[in-house]
Length: 297
Image 1 (cartoon, rainbow, N blue to C red):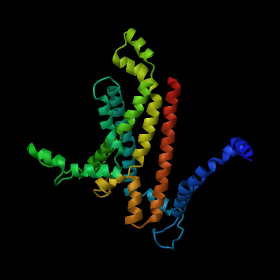
Image 2: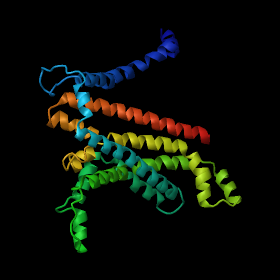
Image 3: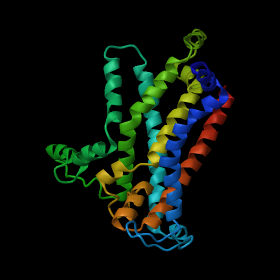
Image 4: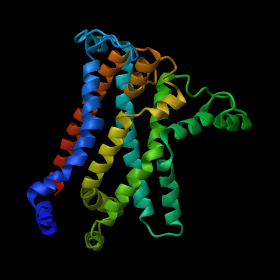
């Protein structure tokens, strides 16, 4: 009996059964909520009532005329691409620096990576106490040197870029680790040969290190882009979308319309558009980076 069972488990049919638990979890926690959200987006449900009516594409058509949604969409793109660019620029610089041999480099790597393990909500509140107008640590430091305090989050555009910078600061350690792994995987013989041929540091980086880092760039950029497009907790803890609706991301707009505005149907429509945006941009950027990998391969 045991022998027959072992033969069955090692067969194609037996191995296929191993996917069943994961498939069930996917259907329960991903597919079902997604389909339920799409269903709700065609209704005027308020989020708690047992009664609702189907209104067709009204929620989706409203998106094209809603100034608040357009602002949140623009902010989301800034959070996504802005954070990804900053994280990758500083990530590769940290990786190049910390790949050198010097005392306490492991400590430096740890310090740079530490913000990654802090929850986004906690990171947002930490920065809230740094940048707030009254009693903020930054304004207190400015007052010591005789400068007037600045209301850092009062201007929507400046607040958006501050949030982008905070998100990049928190997760730059992830990019650093990815690039460190990529740099350490580059054959030293190539760098040594180029040095013997008289190549300078910039030439070695441009023509050898950077092309061979394209797979690492793909991984890092995609992770950072998706994380930035889904940014939520830092926005809520720092500004709650204010002033007005100037710093809302699409994710925080879902929270606003569902819980504060009691418009679950509209929130579901924003959620599905957000899902579609993340999938589409991720696919396009992945295709672009994969093409570069082929060129450098």
